[in-house]
Length: 211
Image 1 (cartoon, rainbow, N blue to C red):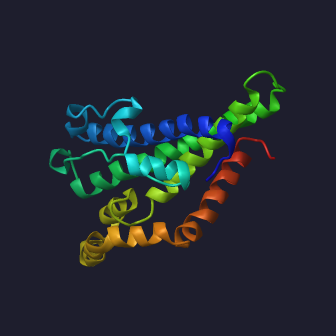
Image 2 (tube, one colour):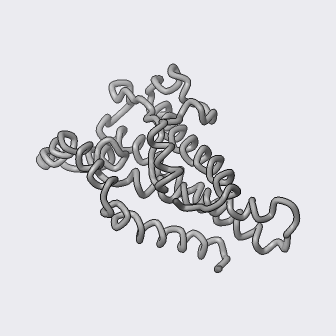
Protein backbone atom coordinates (compact mmCIF):
# COMPACT_ATOMS: atom_id res chain seq x y z
CA UNK A 1 0.00 0.00 0.00
CA UNK A 2 1.62 3.31 -1.12
CA UNK A 3 0.18 5.34 1.79
CA UNK A 4 -0.53 5.00 5.50
CA UNK A 5 -3.10 6.42 7.88
CA UNK A 6 -6.50 7.96 7.40
CA UNK A 7 -5.11 11.13 5.85
CA UNK A 8 -3.22 9.06 3.31
CA UNK A 9 -6.40 7.20 2.41
CA UNK A 10 -8.31 10.44 1.84
CA UNK A 11 -5.44 11.76 -0.25
CA UNK A 12 -5.19 8.55 -2.28
CA UNK A 13 -8.83 8.38 -3.35
CA UNK A 14 -8.97 11.69 -5.27
CA UNK A 15 -5.49 11.03 -6.67
CA UNK A 16 -6.65 7.68 -8.05
CA UNK A 17 -9.85 9.20 -9.46
CA UNK A 18 -7.90 11.91 -11.28
CA UNK A 19 -5.36 9.44 -12.69
CA UNK A 20 -7.85 6.91 -14.06
CA UNK A 21 -10.33 9.53 -15.30
CA UNK A 22 -7.79 11.41 -17.40
CA UNK A 23 -6.31 8.11 -18.61
CA UNK A 24 -9.60 6.88 -20.06
CA UNK A 25 -10.63 10.32 -21.28
CA UNK A 26 -7.42 10.47 -23.32
CA UNK A 27 -8.20 7.13 -24.96
CA UNK A 28 -11.67 8.27 -25.94
CA UNK A 29 -10.57 11.69 -27.12
CA UNK A 30 -7.86 10.36 -29.44
CA UNK A 31 -10.28 7.78 -30.85
CA UNK A 32 -12.76 10.61 -31.42
CA UNK A 33 -10.12 12.67 -33.23
CA UNK A 34 -9.42 9.65 -35.45
CA UNK A 35 -13.10 9.46 -36.42
CA UNK A 36 -14.54 6.96 -33.91
CA UNK A 37 -17.72 8.20 -32.22
CA UNK A 38 -18.14 5.19 -29.88
CA UNK A 39 -16.75 6.82 -26.73
CA UNK A 40 -18.86 9.92 -27.33
CA UNK A 41 -22.07 7.93 -27.76
CA UNK A 42 -21.33 5.90 -24.61
CA UNK A 43 -20.75 9.04 -22.53
CA UNK A 44 -17.04 8.36 -21.98
CA UNK A 45 -15.78 11.71 -23.29
CA UNK A 46 -16.18 13.14 -19.82
CA UNK A 47 -14.07 13.92 -16.77
CA UNK A 48 -16.74 12.43 -14.50
CA UNK A 49 -14.80 9.65 -12.71
CA UNK A 50 -17.90 7.53 -12.13
CA UNK A 51 -18.06 6.83 -15.87
CA UNK A 52 -14.56 5.34 -15.85
CA UNK A 53 -14.35 3.27 -12.65
CA UNK A 54 -13.62 -0.44 -12.76
CA UNK A 55 -14.32 -1.89 -9.28
CA UNK A 56 -11.49 -4.46 -9.26
CA UNK A 57 -8.93 -2.23 -10.96
CA UNK A 58 -9.71 0.68 -8.65
CA UNK A 59 -9.52 -1.53 -5.54
CA UNK A 60 -6.13 -2.85 -6.64
CA UNK A 61 -4.87 0.71 -7.07
CA UNK A 62 -5.87 1.48 -3.48
CA UNK A 63 -4.48 -1.62 -1.81
CA UNK A 64 -1.66 -2.72 -4.13
CA UNK A 65 -0.56 0.45 -5.93
CA UNK A 66 -1.37 -0.75 -9.46
CA UNK A 67 -4.59 -1.31 -11.36
CA UNK A 68 -6.80 -0.13 -14.20
CA UNK A 69 -10.01 1.65 -15.13
CA UNK A 70 -13.01 0.52 -17.17
CA UNK A 71 -11.71 0.31 -20.75
CA UNK A 72 -13.07 2.76 -23.31
CA UNK A 73 -14.62 0.85 -26.20
CA UNK A 74 -13.11 1.68 -29.58
CA UNK A 75 -14.24 0.79 -33.11
CA UNK A 76 -11.19 0.98 -35.43
CA UNK A 77 -13.47 0.53 -38.46
CA UNK A 78 -14.41 4.20 -38.01
CA UNK A 79 -10.81 5.40 -37.98
CA UNK A 80 -9.50 7.66 -40.69
CA UNK A 81 -6.25 6.31 -42.10
CA UNK A 82 -4.22 3.36 -40.82
CA UNK A 83 -6.45 1.41 -38.42
CA UNK A 84 -3.56 -0.64 -37.04
CA UNK A 85 -1.57 2.43 -36.06
CA UNK A 86 -4.76 4.19 -35.00
CA UNK A 87 -5.29 1.59 -32.29
CA UNK A 88 -1.68 2.08 -31.16
CA UNK A 89 -2.22 5.85 -30.92
CA UNK A 90 -5.40 5.39 -28.89
CA UNK A 91 -3.70 2.90 -26.58
CA UNK A 92 -0.66 5.12 -26.02
CA UNK A 93 -2.81 8.18 -25.27
CA UNK A 94 -3.77 6.90 -21.80
CA UNK A 95 -0.25 6.24 -20.46
CA UNK A 96 1.01 9.43 -22.09
CA UNK A 97 -1.67 11.45 -20.33
CA UNK A 98 -0.66 9.85 -17.03
CA UNK A 99 2.99 10.73 -17.58
CA UNK A 100 2.06 14.35 -18.33
CA UNK A 101 -0.07 14.51 -15.19
CA UNK A 102 2.72 12.86 -13.23
CA UNK A 103 5.17 15.56 -14.25
CA UNK A 104 2.66 18.32 -13.47
CA UNK A 105 2.10 16.73 -10.06
CA UNK A 106 5.85 16.87 -9.40
CA UNK A 107 5.86 20.56 -10.36
CA UNK A 108 2.91 21.26 -8.04
CA UNK A 109 4.62 19.36 -5.24
CA UNK A 110 7.81 21.33 -5.75
CA UNK A 111 6.03 24.68 -5.54
CA UNK A 112 4.11 23.58 -2.48
CA UNK A 113 7.23 22.39 -0.64
CA UNK A 114 9.26 25.47 -1.54
CA UNK A 115 6.49 28.00 -0.91
CA UNK A 116 7.01 27.99 2.83
CA UNK A 117 3.31 27.32 3.40
CA UNK A 118 2.73 25.23 6.53
CA UNK A 119 -0.83 26.29 7.29
CA UNK A 120 -4.04 24.22 7.40
CA UNK A 121 -4.07 21.43 4.85
CA UNK A 122 -0.38 21.73 3.94
CA UNK A 123 0.48 18.16 4.93
CA UNK A 124 -2.60 16.82 3.16
CA UNK A 125 -1.78 18.69 -0.06
CA UNK A 126 1.81 17.46 0.02
CA UNK A 127 0.62 13.87 0.36
CA UNK A 128 -2.05 14.35 -2.31
CA UNK A 129 0.38 15.67 -4.93
CA UNK A 130 2.92 12.95 -4.17
CA UNK A 131 0.25 10.27 -4.48
CA UNK A 132 -1.04 11.93 -7.66
CA UNK A 133 2.51 11.70 -9.00
CA UNK A 134 2.83 8.07 -7.86
CA UNK A 135 -0.51 6.82 -9.18
CA UNK A 136 -0.10 8.49 -12.56
CA UNK A 137 3.35 6.99 -13.05
CA UNK A 138 2.32 3.51 -11.83
CA UNK A 139 -0.79 3.59 -14.05
CA UNK A 140 1.33 4.54 -17.07
CA UNK A 141 4.05 1.93 -16.48
CA UNK A 142 1.62 -0.86 -15.60
CA UNK A 143 -0.53 -0.22 -18.67
CA UNK A 144 2.51 -0.18 -20.95
CA UNK A 145 3.19 -3.85 -20.21
CA UNK A 146 2.58 -5.65 -23.55
CA UNK A 147 0.05 -8.05 -22.03
CA UNK A 148 -3.65 -8.07 -22.99
CA UNK A 149 -5.87 -6.37 -22.04
CA UNK A 150 -3.38 -3.63 -21.08
CA UNK A 151 -2.59 -0.75 -23.41
CA UNK A 152 0.90 -2.03 -24.12
CA UNK A 153 -0.52 -5.03 -25.99
CA UNK A 154 -2.38 -2.74 -28.40
CA UNK A 155 0.70 -0.58 -28.89
CA UNK A 156 2.71 -3.72 -29.66
CA UNK A 157 0.04 -4.91 -32.10
CA UNK A 158 0.22 -1.58 -33.93
CA UNK A 159 4.00 -1.54 -34.17
CA UNK A 160 4.91 -5.17 -34.81
CA UNK A 161 5.24 -6.28 -38.47
CA UNK A 162 2.52 -8.61 -39.69
CA UNK A 163 5.01 -11.48 -40.16
CA UNK A 164 5.54 -11.51 -36.37
CA UNK A 165 1.85 -11.27 -35.53
CA UNK A 166 1.97 -14.74 -34.02
CA UNK A 167 3.47 -13.10 -30.91
CA UNK A 168 0.42 -10.88 -30.62
CA UNK A 169 -1.93 -13.83 -31.11
CA UNK A 170 -0.08 -15.80 -28.41
CA UNK A 171 -0.39 -12.92 -25.96
CA UNK A 172 -4.07 -12.47 -26.77
CA UNK A 173 -4.65 -16.17 -26.09
CA UNK A 174 -2.74 -16.39 -22.82
CA UNK A 175 -2.41 -12.75 -21.78
CA UNK A 176 -5.06 -12.73 -19.08
CA UNK A 177 -3.56 -15.80 -17.40
CA UNK A 178 -0.09 -14.26 -17.60
CA UNK A 179 -1.40 -11.03 -16.07
CA UNK A 180 -3.05 -12.88 -13.17
CA UNK A 181 0.18 -14.76 -12.45
CA UNK A 182 2.13 -11.50 -12.43
CA UNK A 183 -0.36 -9.85 -10.08
CA UNK A 184 -0.42 -12.66 -7.50
CA UNK A 185 3.37 -13.12 -7.44
CA UNK A 186 6.26 -10.78 -6.58
CA UNK A 187 7.14 -10.60 -10.29
CA UNK A 188 4.91 -7.56 -10.77
CA UNK A 189 6.96 -5.62 -8.20
CA UNK A 190 10.17 -6.57 -9.99
CA UNK A 191 8.76 -5.38 -13.32
CA UNK A 192 7.31 -2.11 -12.06
CA UNK A 193 9.42 -1.07 -9.08
CA UNK A 194 12.57 0.28 -10.70
CA UNK A 195 10.92 1.94 -13.74
CA UNK A 196 8.34 3.67 -11.52
CA UNK A 197 10.97 4.89 -9.07
CA UNK A 198 13.21 6.09 -11.90
CA UNK A 199 10.41 8.04 -13.60
CA UNK A 200 9.27 9.62 -10.31
CA UNK A 201 12.85 10.67 -9.53
CA UNK A 202 13.24 12.03 -13.07
CA UNK A 203 10.04 14.08 -12.85
CA UNK A 204 11.10 15.46 -9.47
CA UNK A 205 14.48 16.35 -10.98
CA UNK A 206 12.81 18.05 -13.97
CA UNK A 207 10.60 20.03 -11.61
CA UNK A 208 13.74 21.62 -10.20
CA UNK A 209 13.38 20.18 -6.72
CA UNK A 210 15.18 17.42 -4.86
CA UNK A 211 14.22 15.88 -1.54
